[in-house]
Amino acid sequence: MRAVIHIDMDAFFAAVEERKDPELEGRPVVVGADPRGGEGRGVVSTCNYEAREYGISSGMPIAEAYDRCPDAVYLPVDRASYAAVSERLMDRIRRTGDRFEKASIDEAYIACHDLDGFRTAVSTARELKNGIQDGHDLGCSVGVARNKTVAKIASDRDKPDGFTAVDPGTERSFLADMAVSTIPGVGSRTEERLEAMDVTTVGDLASCPEAQLREALGKHGVSIHRKARGIDPSPVGTRSERKSIGSETTFREDVEGIRGVKNFLQVLCNEVGKEVRERGIRFRTVELKLRRSDFETFTRQKTVGSPLRSGSAMYDIAERLLERFDEEESYRLVGVRVKNLRHGGLRQARLSEFVH
Ligand code: TTP
Ligand code: MG
Image (tube, rainbow, N blue to C red; front, top):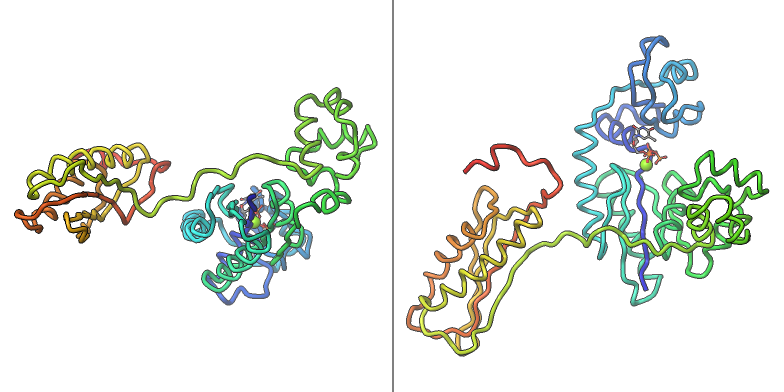
């Protein structure tokens, strides 16, 4: 069985601004367009919870926010700094689970196998939340459940600084009294159509016959019906990024001398190089492993200053490491592994990176 943890940062852009400038503490802070004394165009990106007391919210015209609270601190959007903070948070979150999915700049899912029971996942989630608070000085809200939909709804339940775990088997009762619009995928149009069918709560939706929903809303009706019953089999994104990639081989017969090992090493570097390329990864450390016939095993590694990406660069380093070993010995295994990885697969590569 798996457990899913959903993390959503509280008032994210505003929280990063507050962390930069402690003088903001306790004051309403609005991040967005310039209000220009009430004449500004554009909208509010977000605001802290103090500003929400005035009825200000994301997407509101900045002039309206100004009307509601001219004394708030108005700050422009500093997207680069939020993105940098987000990257560090995502690294932290990614390390906690078996699988990881970034859902937006301030929101992610992780899946944990809970072989030791759901409670283990709940304490993992609690530690993560505390770690983000203590280590990054930022608040977040966390939901833990059997699946993504319920975990997301749970994290939103008690914002800010919320922590909600939905025990397995209680999903339906947890959702029952909530408005149908709580279900991801139920927008205002669907909400209206459901209301016309007297379906206003998630509980109403869950007990509505599936055939009726299919007739009214097609496939979408079936999908939201399942979610309303606390069912969501969708997987959490990709596997957590790996710390190292490598391969090794035990020779069919022991190989005399390091010269004979080189051919095997070449093949391994090609193989690992291919995987590195396919994943868009770069590496700075190459580790060579050798096992002698008497089973004594050695590893040697070298770290270079700028990241590499090819199997041939890997081989060049590994070959030099190999030369530190005794030519007279016989060996039974060779392995190569790259570490200190940069996962830049989805990032736009700079032109200079293609030019060698
Ligand atoms: P959200 O997580 O929706 O909002 P939030 O983190 O500010 O507040 P909370 O989660 O506590 O309710 O969005 C994350 C960031 O995305 C938010 O800080 C600013 C940005 N954003 C916009 O720029 N425009 C928008 O309309 C929304 C909703 C968010
Ligand atoms: Mg948020």
